[in-house]
Image (cartoon, rainbow, N blue to C red; front, side, top):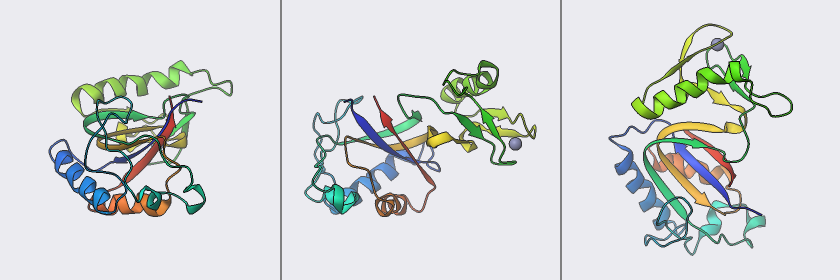
Amino acid sequence: MGDHFQTIVDLDATAADAPRLAERVLDRLVAEGIVLAERTDCVLGQPLGHPPGPRWDKAVNPLDADGKPYDGLAVHTGRTVFHGGQGEAEWARCPRCTATTRLCTEEWERIEAAWTPFDQAMDLWYTTGAADVDCPACAARIPLPDWTWAADYWAFGYLGLEFWNWPEFTGEFRALVAEALGGHRTTYVWGKF
Ligand SMILES: [Zn+2]
């Protein structure tokens, strides 16, 4: 059994406002008792994170509340490519024409011709913060972060709240986080390592 994570990514935060927003949402989570303000060695991929608070159970379904999380919250600020860890996105969907572009075969092999423009755009976005992919169906030039992905596998943003080894979050909790982010659009990336 590996480690699993759930990440709530703010799609509207900019490089400039991500640190301030991170502080605001953290204050809210600490006030609710969901995580602690102190930081300890409780996350993967970063030196320190915030351990679960006395009311961590408010974030999850009551039926899961006997599964106390054994790890904490890593706050990512700065330009970050978030992804679902193991696996692949089966397809990407154009927000303009809603056509899906298959990126993998039924056997989960990458379809290189379809995948290459996305792969190149991901590198460019990571380097510069801007990249587009031409939709193969409608030929529109679509910014990389505006595509939607099978199982919400990818997200491109400047602020992400990555929780390690917690029971599955409720929609109410994800809404609370979005509200603490000033009503920003968020997406939810989850997976395993
Ligand atoms: Zn399209």
